[in-house]
Length: 433
Picture 1 (tube, rainbow, N blue to C red):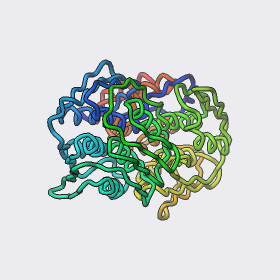
Picture 2 (picture 1 turned 90 degrees about the horizontal axis):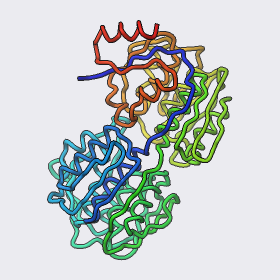
Picture 3 (picture 1 turned 90 degrees about the vertical axis):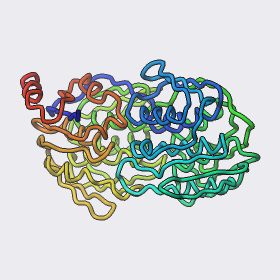
Picture 4 (picture 1 turned 135 degrees about the horizontal axis):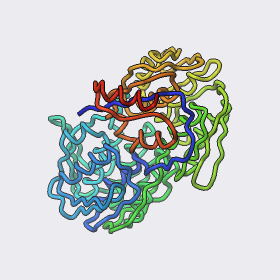
């Protein structure tokens, strides 16, 4: 049954919200967990669709997956009997391709279908395959499957032509049990790269330099069991930061690493919001209409591409003219048409959105085009006058756990209801007045 969100906008968000584990770190860590034959325990796992699909794929190749609770899982990779990840898993979630590096690193062979995922532009995996070949693997693509195998993997010096989070993680996985030393140059520096490296090290890998552009990996003969807790989700935190500012609210966002949020904090402060940092929390508030700025998405520590739709939505409500330049993905402005239905004034020219701030939005029936754009449309609905319905929320649920629950706990009027259920709509409108 397809669901939608219904929102009555106009209430400032106030209170506290606790951020879950980082989805993108968890995807790499779950793949890495199958590389030992001992049991690995992973905590602070976000309970979102992407994670649950990857766990199904891991079970599908024969590993033992035991859900202790919604945020903790035990994985044992000793029972893997199959090194083929089918198209169905990959179509549902692109990050299944991390199993390519993990299986190749453990068994010297793997077979994974070519990936799908959110349609925000082409995300080629040529850098991943270049890395595998540099380690001595033969890589072929036939019948829609990527086949990799090697007599043995041997460390090498690998220079990535473009900074790629996926390739950096996949090469780390493949090389951590290779003979000798691997160096990844022009590596991605995102917080979740560091988290995957820390997790591998907790299993006995020898990885240094994660978080810089040069990662050095000394191969070890085997990995062992570990208990590990995933870092907080930078993008979930950033989304609530923007929502607090957009609704002129005051929200304490708990269980975060403020350093990971600096690029977002700086922009919010620049346009006039108040951001206070604590050890493991940030507080964001705004009591007036905010100002304009220029934003350009860049690899970490720059402004995250996954926060681009949310900040653009906030700037569409701010005074003056702002520009948002998308330098990572080429198809990331699909939400602009939806915001236009709510009264936003945004012109897209190439990879730049030129935003003329408007006084306010009005509620409309809109549809989430992808994960982060969907979250941005929720922010728009929270601000808009009247009622907003958002379809295709399965995109949003790929990366946000209990989104409507966390938002209503901050005082907003929002509910998940079945699509085209007129009675549910009437009931909601009666309830919120």
